[in-house]
Image (tube, rainbow, N blue to C red; front, side, top):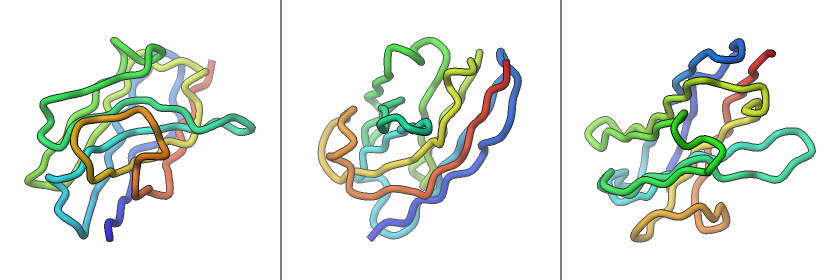
Length: 124
């Protein structure tokens, strides 16, 4: 079992920055691929970014490339999402997810554990 708790969401103006953090407890964090996903009201859950268990591999949605950076600290069991140059279309509930398999994936159905989410609202 893995527990994931996101933090760092909030209200920010367009062009601003936020840093989301996800703290994990339970099963060995360093064995988990980690992902960030987001869901806006009335829309499907979308992939944002993912990082491999070692941190050596990352992947990003085209919509956030060059603006968002995913990182992890296996010693602290945390994964962060630095979000810069935020746009109103980035407004959503952001979820952290863990998957105990090799590699990285943008497919949310592959992830085994999910946090409760943290709200990000970007005003224009």
